[in-house]
Image (tube, rainbow, N blue to C red; front, side, top):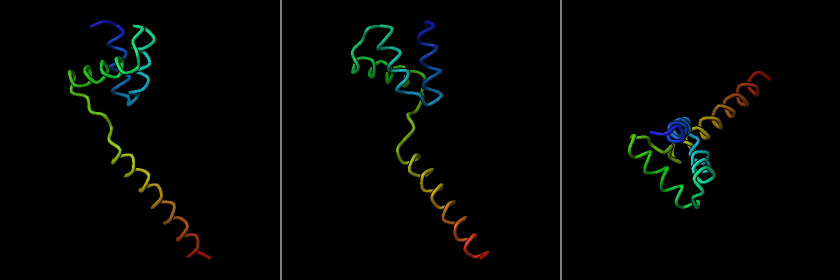
Length: 78
């Protein structure tokens, strides 16, 4: 495993998939689709999962619900 692969794995684990793709694209001179395929292959090889959109929407909904509860509590105080 090269230093480039190690850095890409670190980026993938941190959730920076697009940064890993850009790293391979810039360092190896690959096209964007080639770099995406390489990142996906590495992620599969090391059993790394892409964060799903459902989880993102869950966090957004949780944040919205928290704000709604806070506004309701402030309104209740008045």
